Image (cartoon, rainbow, N blue to C red; front, side, top):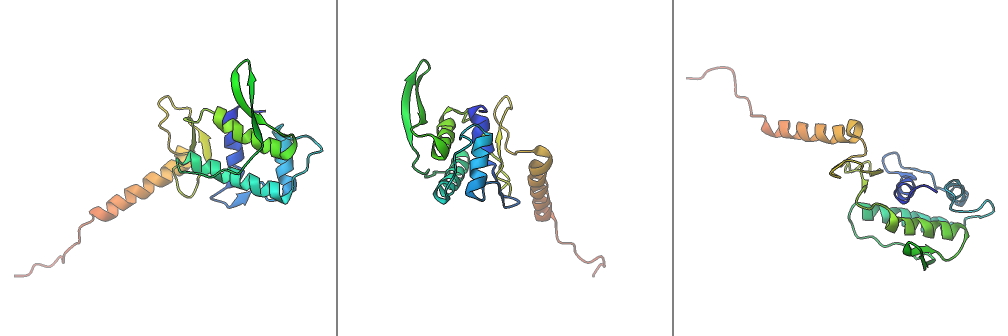
Length: 170
C-alpha cells in the first residue's frame, strides 16, 4: 500500500475534473482499483452502493483539500491501539473496508502537503514538496502558466487607454 498522502492523492485523482473522465465509473472498476492498491482482496466485489460511497468520499476529500467543509460518508472504522498509539482501522474487510482505509489514510497523511490545484478547471490533487509549502498548481508549466497568462491579459486589457483620432482639430 502506498504512503497515506499518495493513497489519498491517487484516490482523489480517479476523477479528472477537466476531462470529466472517471476511473471509477462502475462497481467493477472500483473493485479493481482497490485491489491494485492492496485495499481489497481478489474475491471482493463492489456494489452500486459501494460506488456511490466511493464517489462521495472522493469528492468530500477533494472539498476538504480545497479547505471547504465536507460531509464524508459513513464508513466502518474502529480505533486500534498499538505500539504507535491509537489509529483508525477498517472494522470490516472487503470493499467497504478498503474505502474506510482511504478515509483513515487522510488522517495519517501529511495533510498540509496535500493540495488541490488552484486552477478552477483542473482540481488535480498533488503533494506539495516545496520547502515552504507554497505551491498552488499541480504543474507550473500547464495550470500555473494558464492562470498567470489569464491574469496578465486581464491586467493588459484593463490598462489600455482609449485612443483618440489622429487628426488635429482646431
